[in-house]
Image (cartoon, rainbow, N blue to C red; front, side, top):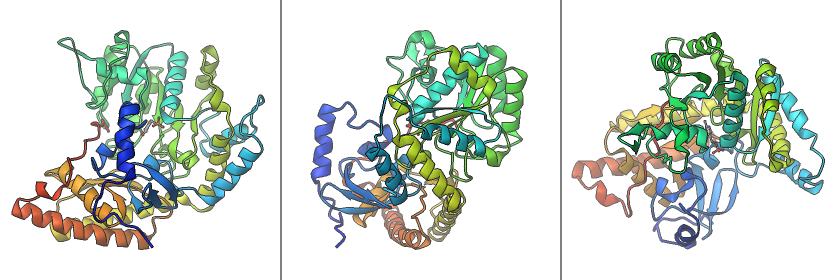
Amino acid sequence: MKKLNNDLRIGRSQKLYRKAKTLIPGGTMLLSKRPEMFLPEYWPSYYKKAKGITVWDLDGKQYTDMTEMGIGSCVLGYANDEVNRKVIEAVKNGSASTLNCPEEVELAEKLIELHTWAEMVRFARTGGESCAIAVRIGRAASGRDGVAFCGYHGWHDWYLSANLADNSNLDGMLLPGLKPKGVPRGLKGTALPFEYNRIDQLEKIIKENDIGVIIMEPLRDKGPENDFLKKVRALATKNNIVLIFDEVTSGFRKVLGGIHLDLGVDPDIAIFGKALGNGYAIGAVIGKRKVMDAAQSTFISSTFWTERIGPVAALAVLKIMKRDNVPAKIYAMGRYINSQWEKLSNKQDLNLHIGGISSLTHFDFDKDNLLKKTIITQEMLKKGYLAGNSVYVCTLHSKKVVDRYIEDLEDVMLMIKSAEKSGTLKKMLKGPVCMAKFKRLN
Ligand SMILES: Cc1ncc(COP(=O)(O)O)c(C=O)c1O
């Protein structure tokens, strides 16, 4: 029988997190997995098992995941049998050796088949390191240090240096929430941010600085306006700048490959991660030969970029995605979720603001957003969901699952509405309000 969390008791998971905070700075390795981002004090935090869209916590309580499915990494659901079969075979045959695994060559070919503008590929295992590789190659190819960026690109020095802006000798905060302490001050002014759809900002940056690389998420929250991406491409070409599209999150979410294929603009380099491995670690940097060749003029090398599980998983994922038309299906289901949220918003006069690529959809309230989001998480947890204000759609989010989730969400929205009317919204919450995500530029 399904074990619910309807009394919100502190269990083994929460106790383990308290211990973790004494042993691991920040408690977790990924900011987005900190319980404080969801429901401080009561979020289950740890899982014993995850299968499909069901997650079991350490007390055996069971939840349907209507949040971010492994922070965007599990498009085929958790522990997909077909992918796992291939991975287990690879483990049995040795996932590491003094020699290289042939699957990396096959995977390179498959990615180039999908992106006909690209000719060469390098592999890594995480999104952030793939971005660092791409930026290194871009700087090596252009021969210039300056980077203009738009979006989130990981934790490395080249990126965080943007927050070293020197205001009255304090570290400026262009991306609030990302602290740059420990990043060499000498990197100040080497990474400059521009906002999405603001071609004027990018033009100014290029005019006033020696920019060799533009790196950006081609699409995240809102679509390009006034040929924005085409103009970025033209600026890059005119000024001999390497244009990189970071598709770590947007890749395989609408079409098979980068979302840029749908937007009709080709970069010089594109980066993939997350969905490509369905929970197994793989990152890919694909690009034009004349740019990628610059990887040979610098040093980019790591032992575990050669292990076998990542490429084997990615090959299985690509096969399933193509056969089952996965990106189009999750995109359509995301649109359905949006339509149901919209209906709910109109019916209950909630004034929800819905945004994002449909398969990575989210909503916000225009008042008391974080408080209401935390209440949703608390009340949905009692009903057996991991839920907040965003859904990263996977293939197992069927219409039946979504309809049930919307029904349960409707009950919670009604509770919020009536508490708001009676001025008791804050009292609904058992613990503190969740933390805000850092502010994005796109
Ligand atoms: C666009 C983008 N780039 C890079 C990253 C960093 O990837 P990772 O967390 O695998 O290092 C992320 C992660 O959210 C991302 O969304």
